Image (cartoon, rainbow, N blue to C red):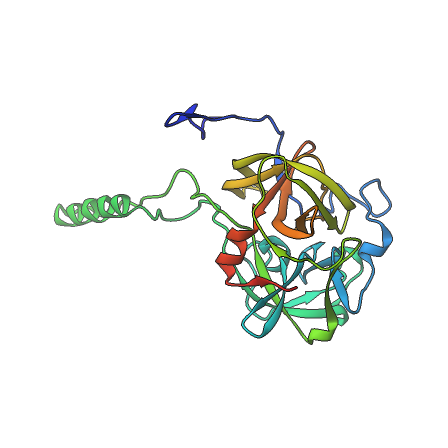
Length: 289
């Protein structure tokens, strides 16, 4: 609540109690195969060609969801989250992407793509981007040097800069290893913006096909990525409880099969979604139709 002022100009803001919002990768310490969060078997199988909605992940993560296919120029790519395909910034370009993901029995023999590009997540650690702060740091260190002091000042940002997307793309080893269809839903018709009250649906690795409604727009949320990793996201979409751990990366579509967002986080009451236009612009891609 401290992040959001009561008013922005003449517009009143609203703070919704959600519980802890987490990036919806699988958490193996709390989930075991066979428990109530276990996915429907068909979403966790090995698929060739692989549709959207099935298990996928960087070789070093537990598992997430293949969202949909996108294009950049003449090339076809898999779209999902940074924390699914790029291991929350820890991956390198051309790292192996496997389908199914490791949690679902995937190995290097199940490699389907390589990491192509991702938007780095800002967790707030490290030097600030503010030019005033860095200028003050430089001035004080120059002064200390003139005075003969061996001590130096280093500025750090107290809060992480806000993120807008948790997104990455992977290049299939061959285009015939993937398909434009999203399991249960079909082929997307394109992309468009969602508004308050938009009815939505998704196909995910863990909870399968679910539906919901956009209950908040322009959302600011604090998202836990495990351990001390906390990221602030702004201008997000919020739906109700339509996702579980492992659904990260799923494409979210409206009732007319247009992609409106990329699912990446949630709590026991909510699902947090990157607006799709932010994702497409950040990665310079278009939905494959």
